[in-house]
Amino acid sequence: MLTNRLVLTIDLHLSAPSLQLAHHRQLHDAARTLLDHLDKHQLPATFGLSRPGYGQLAQWISSHPQHETALLMQPASDWRQWGGKGLVDEVRRLAGHSVRSVFAHGPLEQAHASALRHAGILAIRGNGGSIQGATLQNGMPWFEPSIQAPSFLARLTEWLPHRFDFAKPATAQVMRICGETVANAGPWAKDQAIRAIDFAAKFRDRGGSVETLANCASQLETSVDKAATVSKAA
Image (cartoon, rainbow, N blue to C red; front, side, top):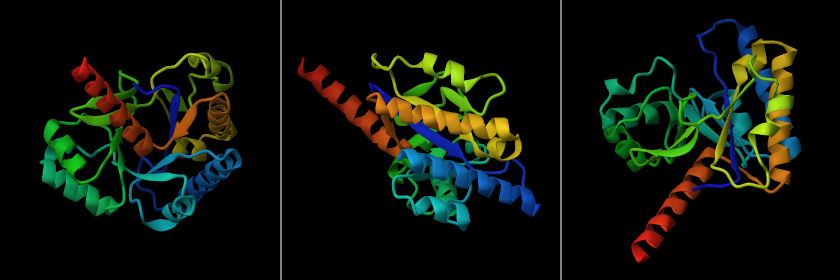
């Protein structure tokens, strides 16, 4: 079981294809704001892009080696339309061979999990399922956000601290920041995203570990392997 770990994930894509340059500029401005604030606190994050390795956003993220780039599957993507190899081919078509994490919108079947693991994918982040935090789904480390920001339903400055007991170990927590909302919803959304990153820094400064998705997945697998070894020895 992972304890005292927080994974920052940031979605950077437009929910609907847009030909309006202003929308893309707003998303780029939001990304730059988030990157700058992460750098201020020296925090790592995992950024989800629909085409990792391509474009200015990917170049900005890759210039900061502490960050990770993940493939953000479009909401319309239905994994059931592919077999295991077909899914891997689609992931590689979109993301190349360097990506180690995927942001998904649907359940993972055994064939898909096996194929993705064989292709080098270490972790998958869902989009807000009922079981939050870090689990194993068909042998693949699966992370569901326990914190969504920005959110109309939450005043992060008040409720975020109550979700964590810094002195008590807990399972790994996952924060999801929606870049499109930060870009388009106004000053309140930007303020919440900044405060969420500030909270992550506070979490780190009080002894917690802030990690990328792939690094946290590696730690999860190591933890499970150690537990299995101890169980067999007993």
